[in-house]
Amino acid sequence: MNMTREEIIAALNPDTDPAPLFARADQVRREQVGDAVHLRGLIEFSNYCRRRCYYCGIRAGNLKVRRYRLTPEQVLDCARTAVKLNYKTVVMQSGEDPYLSPRSLASMVERVKAETGLAITLSVGEHTKEDYKMLRSAGADRFLLRFETSDHKLFSMLKPDSDYENRFRCLAWLKEAGFQVGSGVMAGLPGQSAESMADDIPALQAAELDMIGIGPFIANPDTPMGGAVCGSLDAALRMVALARIVTLNTHIPATTAMGTVHPKGRQKALKCGANVLMPNISPTEHRVDYSLYPGKICTGDQPEDCAACVDAMLASLGRARAEGYGHTLKAVT
Ligand code: SAM
Ligand code: FES
Image: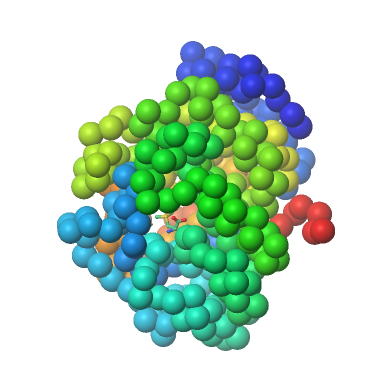
């Protein structure tokens, strides 16, 4: 469903009552993807990164981060935990770790796939077209790569060693390789105008995504953006609602960042368009070190705690876990 730029800007205006927007998004969500919520077990397997994104706590050069990298055996153990907890997907996420070659990532994917049969989502940043193909052949089904903002100038300011065009080229390569592709943005970035945030919505729509992840920007004191004002939950929720309304049957998570800025942030997102949760299944001892932003939820929890927490959340909302792998609902071309 299309919305005009003026309609989107008006919907994002904090002075506009969001209730009608949220109700409409909730209705579209119910009609398009149903009431069931997909659980994707998140494995944060390395916090090494070669990039210096200005907002990100695990950026290269942040000496306050205690770096870690899980062994392939540890990653497999996490995936076994996912099976035990009856999750159907694992999301393997990391910084762009120079030590982990695409070949070694592929071999990790092969092992997880062969032993567990889980759907595998990768979130490991920018690679070449050939490497994406190799990762897909190894058994990865999906790939998450947020473009972070559609605003070229803002992108270059926040990601000084990344290239805007290449980020979108990577999304095209991922599609070509046969991945189900997710992208997304942060809401309330430093220096982001209302118009710039509004323009993210048609950009997400134009990218024809299978999954869309949106979270508020959270200032991390150990980064160059440490003194900036954080994005609001309200703006992020409005963005989720708009993404649902314009893209219809996309999988949209209630993100960890939303749960971090407000104790009921994820519940609110599930009520205005979201249909996915990503409970953490990383080893508890390393969670605190995957410190993208301060106050990140669940850092002291065991995977079982997170499973119990999301089940209780779903029960309180009258929603149930989805059956099945939760593959894309878009027509496969
Ligand atoms: N390296 C991969 C990449 O860049 O796509 C995946 C890991 S990256 C840490 C995952 C996501 O975390 C980013 O796409 C970004 O949107 C989010 N993120 C990083 N720092 C953040 C912050 N300070 N506040 C909110 N979200 C943040
Ligand atoms: Fe690389 Fe954030 S700067 S994951």
